[in-house]
Image (tube, rainbow over all chains, first blue to last red; front, side):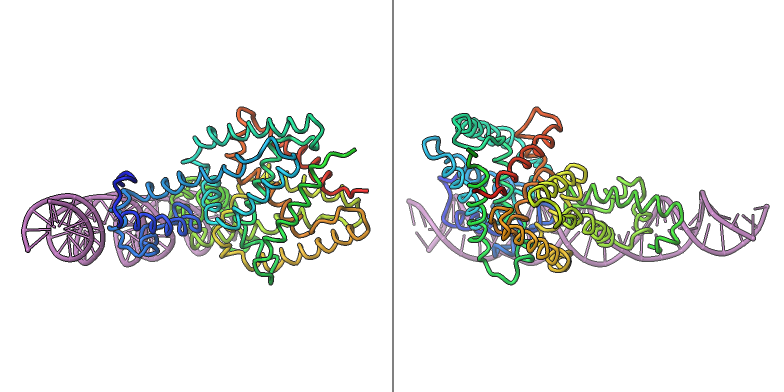
Length: 206
Length: 206
DNA sequence: CGTGATCCTGACCGGTTGGTCAAACTATTC
DNA sequence: GAATAGTTTGACCAACCGGTCAGGATCACG
């Protein structure tokens, strides 16, 4: 892969199509379940042609994960110390839920990776992610010390937000199977539920 | 596989060792990532010998999933209409968390299966599981109608309980990576957090 | 002890997988 | 319209996969 600056038109098109197809395949079959043939077919290319743009299966996977981490942390990064604590956290929850609705494949790719021990992203988890969680946990603790938020362990609160929102992407099949015969309306339901739920849990008691 | 009654000593030992090793491998590598060689090595058997006890890879996997579903639903099944609503739900949360602590591999096996579209357990999901959720949701709605529980969509409440508790098994690596350098103490922390969290969210406001 | 049932193994097989390569084809540039 | 750089392909390969099989080792029991 040449540097972005020197990419030709065809290179831009084809790498994009490959990554798109690879996201489909990796997110539903997992790393080992995915095959180059399937990705190539999905991208409308031959297998050798695919390997002209990426040196290996591993490289495609790594490229997807690298592009993922930045966007994934963004909703938490936007938690604003100047806003109302409960509104801020509820807004964060809804941003995260929206990510599950719009980018379920990315969520599943991430889940697959963590499930298998996060061999390829452990560094990011123990680096950027950990630092961001530490920073925002301190902010939440600050809000709690001021009595503006129920005193609940901040890091586990963040875990619960990840869990509840990503659940609608990662366990989509199960959710649909149980909520059947509804359509996609369950994301709106989930938004209402999570708003009420977190608002109720976080509001301090007199 | 003979029926349990006619199983010899060696059959009992070896099928148990195979299922134990298979659980390890399937839960961390997924169905396609798992290989018979790895399972056989983990069980201390040769590959042909493994296939003497199970007719195929598929059969081992199916056997694991079949044994799983029964236990998996048990904590919810024990939700008691006679108890105090909030105590009952919190107790359910803690039972589920305990499952994540004691049986993380089973949780990951299940998660892997759902992530990949639940091709082999869709029937159970749309059958037993769906029926049980429907039954318990009705109970929760009843409690809410009596004003003993905050009015929060029951089925999504159940989803949130699954999500938050299973998170500590399925995303264990991530949780540890962020909470480092703690040991296993995070399960006790999680129990405290979830108790306070659900108690706060579910208690009706005056 | 013997004998039949159970258990185990090395060698093997067809299919699939990630990846290579030389050669042919196409786009861009002067 | 060459010459060059960039793109695509069919044929191929070694490694690995799930699974088979004939025969040998071991066990349980009369």
